[in-house]
Image (tube, rainbow, N blue to C red; front, side):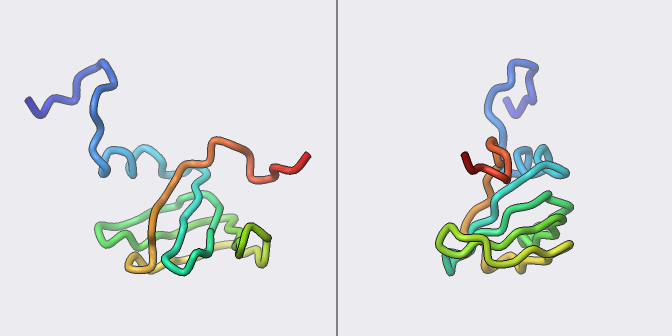
Length: 89
């Protein structure tokens, strides 16, 4: 019953995290700060390495970093970016 069937059924959090490597993500920290960029890698402690990272405080862009490393105990959640990083119209 642990099957990874072809119907796209239930995925574990580990499956989700493996599937989003190399894709745009939003990482929300416990402090409320958002980091948006490309997920390079992560480990079992939720330590995260990102590329093309942008830091947002209260929804406003504050800094841009080439690469960033976020310690896992600061992470509230990781979300995929369905929208483009440059949303303004």
